[in-house]
Every structure is written in C-alpha cells, then in structure tokens.
Length: 372
Image (cartoon, rainbow, N blue to C red; front, side):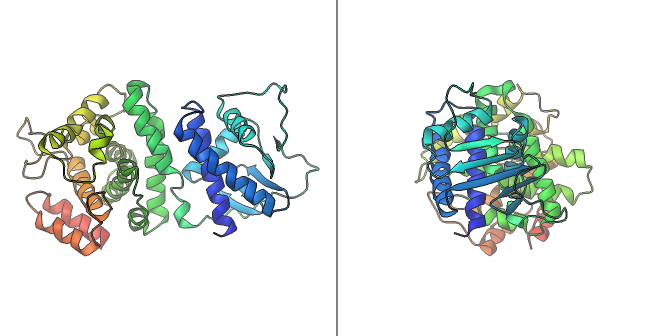
C-alpha cells in the first residue's frame, strides 16, 4: 500500500475511533477495532519514518508527513473540527506509543476523557504550531483537490452511528449528521461525474444496510437534481432516502444477515420494517414529513402491490417511487449472503421488466438514462 493510502487509513481510523469514543465505552467493539488498527498503523509508520509520525491540522487541510488531505471530505472534516475544538494544530506520535496512551488521546479529543497532567504523555505530543516550529506541515495551493474517491470518505462510518443513534435514542438521535451526509452527497455529485458507479463498486460485504442506505441516497439525490427542484427540496428527499431503511435497525440481526432463504415467519418480521421505521421516525423532529412517508412507502409499488398494503387510493409519493427504483437497483448490483451481485445489464433488464407495474414509467426512464 502506498504511503498516501496508509496515511488516509490512519486519518480515517483516527476519526472513527474518536467518533466511537464519544458514543460508546472503551470496551465496545466499535471503539476497540478501529483503535487497534490505528495503533498498529501508527507504530509501523512512525518506525518507517525514523521514530515519529507527524500530523498537522491547518484550517481546511490535514497534512501527514508532507502529504496534504482536504478536510472538506466528511470524515476528515469532522476530525479537523474536533482537533480545532481542542486547540490542536499538530500531533507527533512516537513509534513506541502504547495502546493505552493512544486510547487516552482518542478519548481526550472526543471530549469523553481529560488529562490534568498527573499522567504525562510519553509518546504523544500535541498543541499549536508556533512561529519557530520547523516547516514540517506545508500549506498547499488553495485550488488543489483530493482524489475523487475521498469525496465521501468516512460517510459510511458516520452513517452507521447516525442510524444506530436514531434507532436507539429516538428524538435524541443525531439527525444533523444525516443532513451533513446528504450535503456531502450533493457536493460529491457536483464534483464527480461517476460517483454513483464508484459508490456501488465500493459496496462492502458487511454493514449492508449502512452502505446500501448511502448508495440509495446518492442515486435518489441524483434523480431529484434532474427534476429542477430547489436545493432545500433535494436535501429533504436525500434525507428521506438516507433513512428509508431505518426500520431494519429494529429487526433482529440474525434475520437480516441470514445466508439462506427466509421462512414465512422471518419474512413477515422483515416486512414490518417500513411500518416500524415510519412509526419510529414520527417521534423525531426531522423538519419534514417526507422521511416518514418514504420510509413507509418505499416497498409499495407503482401499481400499489408490495407492502404494507396501502390504506388510501393515492399513488405513492414521487420521492418514495424514486427511492424504490434506487433501492431495487442497488440490491441487485450488490453482494448478499444468499447470492452474488448481478452485472449492470442484468440488473437494468430486471428493472425494465417492472416498468409500468412495479416502477413508475417516467421515473424509471429518467433513472435508466441517468445510469446509462
């Protein structure tokens, strides 16, 4: 792996560790796993670089050993903001840093721990960049942008916590971070022509609901952007698409991750996720009813078949129909424990078979034109 890729992985796991530390106790796997990777990579890189790894935080830039990263990407931007809140402009990590000291630093930055000086830092030093500091953290040109795949760096990790937070805490869940993700999606679609294809190719085989929700959000926002809607309307639609499967957070994991075919009882339970999700979202202040509507309707087809059984004669909301198209396409194109992913042409063929019955014809035609 090239140095820049390793440094990006370090920044990503540092951001993940700090995010998790703000939400979970230190014994939780969401803290332990990224922290262990972070500790291992830091030690290896510090040793390779002669004894220490240096990281600088300069407004919208993070620089790791002369390699600049743009802090406008979601995960790295959150990391930069947390460092700024702590008054940290530089961090130097020694090759002999221990896991407990790394953990203490992560919890300190997260605001979940503190240091009164009684336990000195041995292999980690941090603070502000002084005027007499050597030029270890160069400022790059303002016009430089990171490689396109970094546009949504860290988004799936943040979304994992957003979905869990909303499902567990209800009205106290962090909806604002969901809106931040939608804003990053909108920005990414403006900056990268092939973002949709990249997101689907990067789909992970674990945390399916998280990666799937982000993929669907990307595709629905792209559809909405072609309908001459306002930025505010597109943001509302994007948030609705992002949260469309929130009800799956309330379905037992063994059913969601079952490698074989679901029996009738299991299918009945998973079929409740639109109702469970919509009922849950009604308790939360989202600034719009659209997430509740889309969550409830995204499995109701254009011909009103599907589930749950519609209570009213009206057709589903256009945002629900757009979400349904993206939902089915992404499900077909991504790996699942019970089948491999389908190639693009096969997936498109299946969508075309449902034109006018399962899918709204006009919306489907626009979607297929978009991904052609």
